[in-house]
Length: 185
Image (cartoon, rainbow, N blue to C red; front, side, top):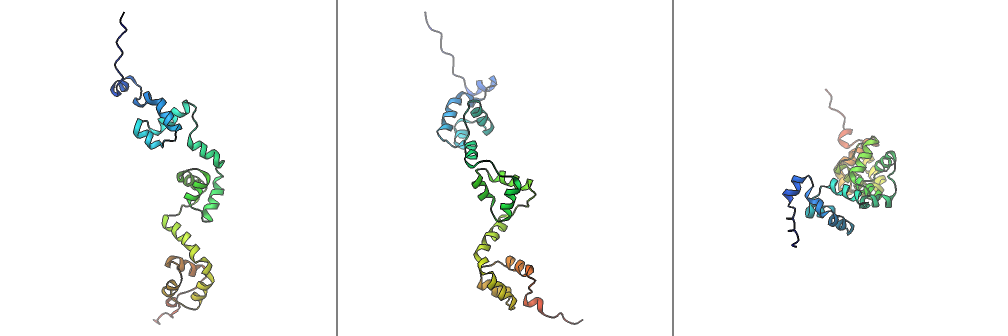
């Protein structure tokens, strides 16, 4: 007796009509690729599952995600107010994210929860540029008190005009132009 003819292979079109996602037939290969360390974008390009479908498959198969492993490595994320304190003290979102093994988006969300106003990239640059001149603060203040112009101070010290203006305002120091008597009317 002849054996029955093999069924034709399921095509993507046949799978779509059957209600089964085309990538499902590669579920074992997807799990194996993930366990071997393939990046998610590479698995997505090769087999086609959306990220949410991929993570659901991994949960169904009992595979721990790398994200969960990173979080376990770093311990639980501190409270929002603790993160906000570190951020106000000068830590960047990227540094906090790397320290705690989470994304910058997670850090941003937690900072907003704590009521922090997030810095722009240029404000971050200014903040970290301050480390270049902060040790020179007494000299900069002495030059400002001596009546030096902003241009002269900036030519001598690595400080931005914005920072210098803020420094003058914080210390109630005026520029030579502000010291001139107003013209009589």
